[in-house]
Image (cartoon, rainbow, N blue to C red):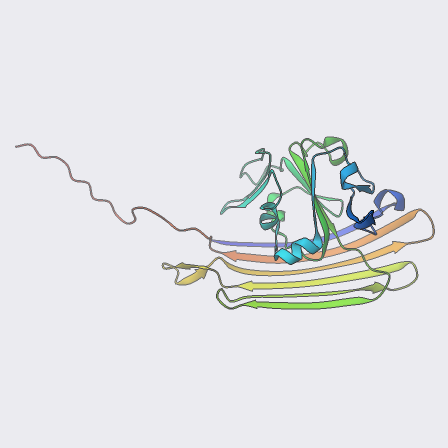
Length: 271
């Protein structure tokens, strides 16, 4: 089976700096790391939020080599994301919407404040993130009526005040998997900053399909994101974000067990 998804997104956000400021993720307080989250549309310490919430930093995601929400869900309690041949199941505390692609998810997913209503968008590669917040339980007050089971809030890294860039590449020989990630960030003027991220992944697979004579799942992923941020001296800030993603998967990591081929049944004969 072959899955191919392309996504092009353009996002413009304008909001007061007080409500959406996300300059620092971790603060040093008394020798302890305080994780700052925006689950209630404002900066708060993780321990100060009166919600059942888990937060994973972007540094932790990179160190674990996790590339999508399915792999991240294995380290977050009560969150289960499964990619199937038909759809993606997103569940919190066992509550999900099923495999019908016409349904919006019971677990609402937001990326930089933008609602992602379809389950296939959870396959988006996780690149250059600030953090991921998982809110368990109904969240209709702040995240809308579709957040029945909870919400997943993905926050990207913002443009920096100083110029910086990075390039990383890795190759895994057994499954012939290659990854390349590049990041460029810095100021354009005193009030405007930009950040550009590029990502490419290619993997042949780790299951051998004897019928197709190939390894599966065969994965090809390409992703580009650009953020242009304006922060003036007043209380107003604005973001312009462009994203393009193209990710394809051939085959599923499954193996058939049991009888295969035609079945011959013998009937009793009476003499």
